[in-house]
Image 1 (cartoon, rainbow over the protein chains, first blue to last red):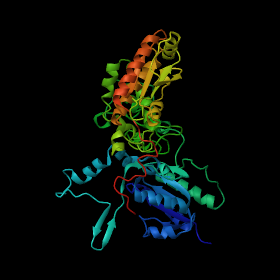
Image 2: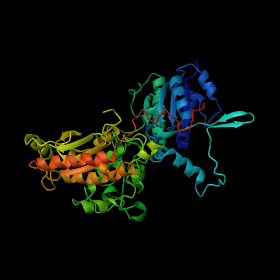
Image 3: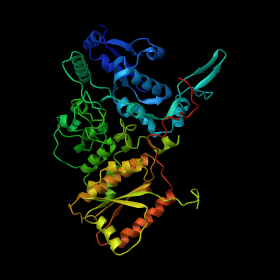
Image 4: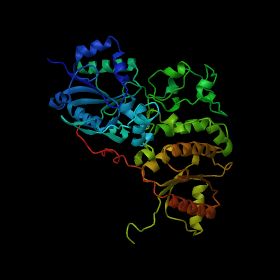
Amino acid sequence: MSKPKFAMYWAASCGGCEIAVLNIHEKILDVDANFDVAFWPVAMDAKYKDVEAMEDGSILLTLWNGGIRNDENEHIAHLLRKKSKILVAFGSCACEGCIPGLANFSPVNEIVDTAFSTITTDNPDNIRPQSSFAMPEGNITIPTLYPVLRTLDQVEDVDYYMPGCPPESHQIAAVIDLVIQVLQGKAELPPKGATIGAGNSTVCDECPRKRNVKTIKEFGRIQLTHADPELCLLEQGIPCNGPATRSGCNARCATVGAQCIGCYGPAEGVVDYGARLISAFASVIDSNKPDEIDKILDGLVDPAGQFYRFNLAGSLLRSSKSAQKG
Amino acid sequence: MTEETKPFEPVIIGFTCNWCSYRAADMAGTARIKYAPNIRLIRLMCSGRLDPTFVFKAFAGGADAVLISGCHPGDCHYVEQNYKAMRRFHLLKRVLVQMGIEPGRLKLLWASAAEGAIFAAEINKFVEEVRALGPLNWAKPGELVSTPIMEEVTA
C-alpha cells in the first residue's frame, strides 16, 4: 500500500517555519516513514503543474505557512485546498499575518518605494518591478502584489490552526505523533477549526514570574530597565504581551528575561488581540487623571506595533486606512 | 434629492452605562429634547464593561464614529470602573490614530442621570463634528482582496 501524501508550502513568510519542522531532529524520519512528500518547494524540486495533475483530495496533509500577499500565493492556496484532505494554517503568518502582515500599516506603493528607492538601495535608474515585461523571447511575468496581506483563512477554508512564530518544535513533534496515531487508527482528529499544537490558556498561565497586582507609573523599555527576574514584567512597566497571548511555548521569552511579544497569537476566546492588550495595559496604569494617563502612555512608543506585531492582518480592522487607500 | 446631493449622515455607535449616561438619554426623551438620530445607543452595565473589541468591531463594520459615555469621575456605580474606561479610551485612541482613524471619531463623554439636556447637546455637537470629517468607509473583508493593484497577470 502506498503511503499517504504530505505537502508543505510557503507563501509570504521567512522560511523559519520550515526550519522549525527540521528542528524536530530524528522525528523527521517518522514523517518519512509514514508519508510520501508530494510537494515541498523548500526541500525538493516540484512544479505547480505536477500538483495540478494530482487527483483532488489526494494529499492527506498540507502544512501551509505564510500569508497571502500576491496572486501566486492565492492561486496556490486554492490549488492546495482542492488537492488536500487536511489543510493546516501552520505558523503565525498563515494564522494571523505575522511580521509580513505589518505591511498592512502602509500603502503598497510605499512598500515598493522602501524596497527600491531608499538610500541603502543601489538603484540609480529607479527601476521598479513590473508584473509583466516584454522580452525578445516573449512576455515574462512575476506575481502581482495585492494591496494588503491576508491570512490563509481569509482566502480559503482552513481545517486546523497551528500558531507560533515559528511553532515550537516539541509542539510540531506532538502534532506529527498525533497524525501518525490517527493513521494507525489509535486516535481521532480534533474537530475542524481547532487550534492544534498549543495550549488553551495564556502565556501568563505558564509564566513562572510572580504577580502581585501592582500598578505602574511609567512604561519602560526592556533594554533600558534592570528588571527584577522574579516579578511579572508588565507590573514592572515593561510592555509584555503575555495576558492576551496563547500558551504553548512554556513562556520561553519571559522565563529568560525578555517580554512576550505575542508570537503564539490570540488566546482562546480573544476576538481582537490588540483590544485585549489595550484592556490589560490600561489596567496596570496607576492614575485617574487624564493628563497623567497621557504622560504614562507616552512611554509606549508604538502601541499599534506593540499590540499587532503578529496580528494585524488577522485583527478586526485588518489594515490601516492608508494601506486601504493604496 | 438624488443620492449624490443628500448630505452625509454619519452612523455613530454610542455606548452608555446603565446608571448614568443611559438615564441621561432617557431623561432627554422624557423631557422631549430632540437630538440627531445618527447615534445608535447600546446600553452596558458600566462604561468599564466597554471592551475595546466593541469599538474595533463598530469601525470595521461601517460606523463613522464611536461614543463612549459613563458616569462622571467619582460617581461610578461600581466605584471606579469608569476610570478604567478612561484609561482604555486614551490608549485606544492612540492605536486608532496609528490605524489612520482620526481622533475626532472617538469621543468620551461623562453624563449624569440628570444631564439629559447636556447629553443631547453633546450628541448633536458630535454628529456635526463627524459630519465634517466625512465618511470613514472602512474596507470590508471582501474588498481590497481580489483586485491586484497592477493589471492582472497569470502567475
